[in-house]
Amino acid sequence: MKYNFDKIINRKNTNCYKWDTTKEDVLPMWVADMDFEVAPKIIDSIIKKAQHGVFGYTMIPKEYYEAEIYWWKKKYNFEIKKEWIEPTTGVIPSLSSIIQTFCESGDKILIQSPVYHYFNISIENNNCEVLNNNLIYENNNYKIDFEDFENKIRNNKVKLFILSNPHNPVGRVWNKNELKKMGELCLKYNVLVISDEIHRDLVYKNYCYTPFASISEEFLQNSITCTSASKTFNIAGLKASNIIVANKNLRVKLNKVLNRNEIKSLNIFGIDSLTTAYLHCEDWLDELLIYLEKNKDYLIDYIKKEIPELEVVKPEATYLLWIDISKLNISSTKLANKLENIGKIRIISGGTFGKNGDNFIRINIACPLKTLKDGLNRLKNGINQIKTLEN
Image (tube, rainbow, N blue to C red; front, side):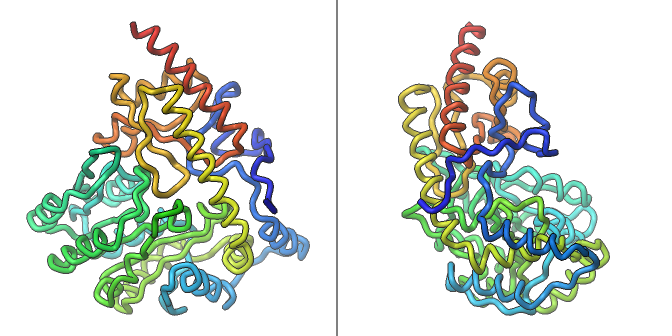
């Protein structure tokens, strides 16, 4: 391979949220960033910008928009226009601004638990009410409860539906039929769809991601898509993301709030990094996906052989694996705490993502294989010790 994903990068004492908020002797496999060195061309773009020596107020150049347009077309055959793109500092600030634009205090917003917990946080911080269309877990996979989906939006005057596509944390890549059914119900009941597609590029072989807005003109006009290069290319700290809004009326309303919230001034290095990533680093992503596939397969095989009490939920996307712990008869919060103290590994409890996630844990496999092996050994030893103590 051209790129060395086995390289160990010491991230301690670098103000790293993942490593420097974790105890010294504990291995962090929790928060969603990768322990891989970014693509060399991204590093080169940052060095070139830094060597200029002046970092004043910065406009967003046409190349930035061209890179976003190129990526959608090249990877997903989805043609977007420059005027649809609203650059922002991040997906979560974008989500909060969207809620502020289209909702009033007390309005109801639908999500699909277990789901990324900042959906809940953003909704509640903006004085709106969370409604859950709980996903159904069966046969080692998740599906949508469409009857409940329709009942929730019909009976509660739902304003927005926040879709996670691909889904974090359960790893589903919603197929076109599933997306169509959700989209048609939202059109039927006049519910605006907000699609978080930040994990769109991290899909395993044999699965196909479909941009929600690409399915039909009606979906395009009744949706707002949030995305970023941050997860794909490990550049979350550079603060650059994009909202795609084809509907002019929606875009005009949203733009006022984005400006009011002052989240449209991108980091000077983030602009160049996103542009470089999309225009020049696809080969890095191709190799990353191969490496993640191997890590995923290694973890599944290890758990099957060494920790048979656990079951890995069938992963279709993301480097965040969702693992069923129900046979241990212990809450995910309690298990996560004990694993950190006893097993010396930090993971995220499934209960973080909703009550129906409490029989699960989430583990980040975006790390060198050596680190993954260490983490899995800690997981195994920790669970064995916990079982002994519980008995």
